[in-house]
Image (cartoon, rainbow, N blue to C red; front, side, top):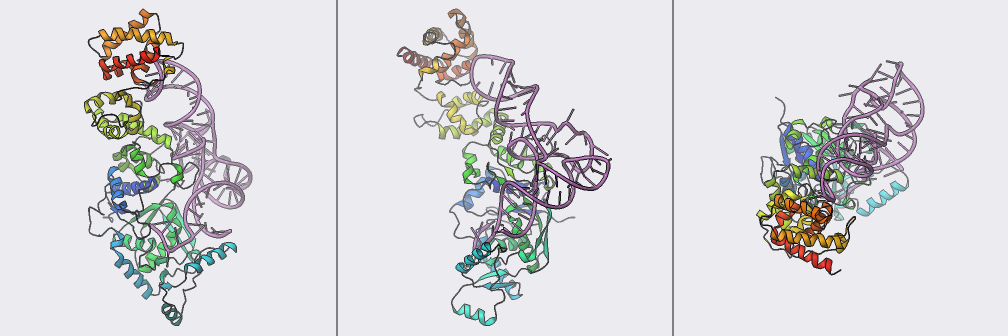
Length: 489
RNA sequence: GCCCCCAUCGUCUAGAGGCCUAGGACAACAGCCUUUCACGCUGCCAACAGGGAUUCGAAUUCCCUUGGGGGUACCA
């Protein structure tokens, strides 16, 4: 019986979750689920200055939206709780004290100013960067002196000065670092909070995390983490560093690249299943052809071996295409339910709320092939709801068309339609198609002005279905308005 | 500057020495379908960064160059 696999996602509550973080969460979650393991959510709020109000709740909401469930963490608890680091401060302090006592760490009294000067000097003289270990070998007297001066020290790790540390990464293989280049990182800040480095190691150990799955940007501090594990007498977990997510200019995906928080994608009308599928394929692939893959298959087939090492650019076009795929795959009623809130929110203010769901139910099949996000529905379908349409008379005069033919066509259509009892796709087509012939014009020459009259759009769903949904009264009213507009020009 | 890493079509990727005249997808382009727009379908453009080495044989192994990314905080 092998050890139960436990992974965690450990975001800091500094705002809405970034899609890159979500990708990390997804991979950690998939790895746990694939292996029948445990997925832990832990909040890393050790930077008091960056904490954002409500972020802890927002993180959970986004994860729930994506259906990435956690077995232990905020809201669900667990035997290793609490899962919020600011509630575990005692643990880190104890760890720091233990390291201090065994001589594996030391107090550093250097001022910010001195550190800045040091960095500048190092850079200028092409020296390796890192703390110069000024306080590492302070004598008892020197330390007493500093304390007397009232300086609150930080605690730094006493890293090995020689030899090398090897990371056995599940994705990158063995990566070797020279120990003398590993910095004496700060473990405990002067405000009493731990840094990420300390808190992370202590919690991952206490929470029995077996696989640390995190972003590539953590690679370079991993040697230090390994030293920390060793100094604490902890077993070193397995590491898997995920390749970066880049923006279109190949730099770290950030605000400059448009939407980056998962919340923004949600608000733009992307489906959670799209986001999961899309993100899973950023750095992982099943084979040489699979693009659309279900959550179940993802769990079934996910493996770290198939994670690539190359950073990936976030491709919005492909995401949009994929969202269209998922939207079209949704059952009619399901799509209706998802679209409703976006219509309620996105339709022009003058339209009466709440919307009639039975009316929207007729509209959804007409627009589903024509929109690629839920949000698109509001702009695309607004003409179904508006009382007064705004016509651009140019639109009536399309290819091989004059205002006169358009006027003639609309006039004739109005008469025919007024007399029509049943207003269905079939009856409309049966009435209007022959009419074109009677008028001696092509069907397009009749249908196009009619489309513009009833929708005020050049691109709209199929005419007869659209008119049937709009209903006789609305259609006639719009045709009259169009006629007036045309006559006026 | 210093440390670490990466390198296949514009983009996401398949490829773990002969199956590769390098496959799939998005995008682009050209068609078909069609009352518009879409959807769908068909076709097409397009890549192994460069140079050495190993080998009968290299996209696949090694080295160098170049390019790119990440780190270099009392942030995570």
